[in-house]
Length: 204
Image (cartoon, rainbow, N blue to C red):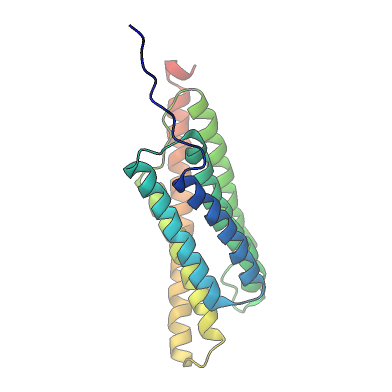
């Protein structure tokens, strides 16, 4: 008896279109950071975060998951997050005291490059290497820290009181350090998982 192969979802489906839109929003965000338009940066980053949630929700809800989507979605997320921190780095370095310095951004970018490479290698060999709760916490804190940075920078350019500026700067710094801790810990967790998977017979 002949078997019926279920049709593949179209490549240019709505979730993938939203992922493409998020990439375009990332480019807009980088321009806004360069021009120090902090209020617009908050709005654009919030919109990008909404598309990130929405494309995943629609892909699961409508059964539109695809190989392109599974690879493109996290890649665009990394471009958005890493690019934003890179563009913010000059602003952090020139502030006193500095709240974003080169080693912090290096940790963020290096973690993403290493884990993305490991995930691609292991999944090509048949292993399951998806994000877990610590990886999702890391992503949430990276986004929260960016929001904190944008809000703090916006307040510095407005007529808010010094107390409000100090408060949000303190929150910003706390989010940055929490994000860095989650980034390092999640990276170590993935490295341990990868080492255990590489020891199994199925990947030998």
